[in-house]
Image (cartoon, rainbow, N blue to C red; front, side):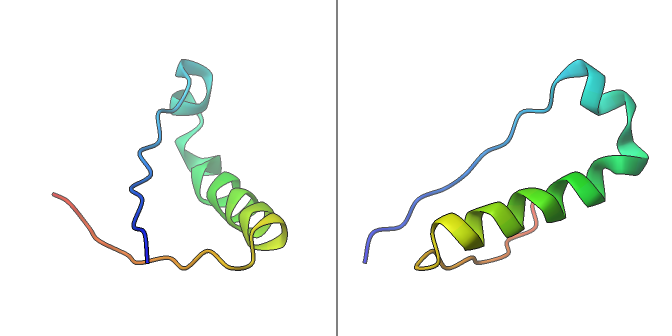
Amino acid sequence: MKTFILLTKLSPETSKQMKDREQLGRNWLEQVKTKCPEVKFFLIMLC
């Protein structure tokens, strides 16, 4: 199985609206799940 890494860059406008970032992420995730149901996500936190 191929593995891909997704890096996200936020626009300056989005960066200023950090309180809305969680909802934007959820909306994006739902779109991906709808359009690409075969995609599997792994959570890796980098600090």
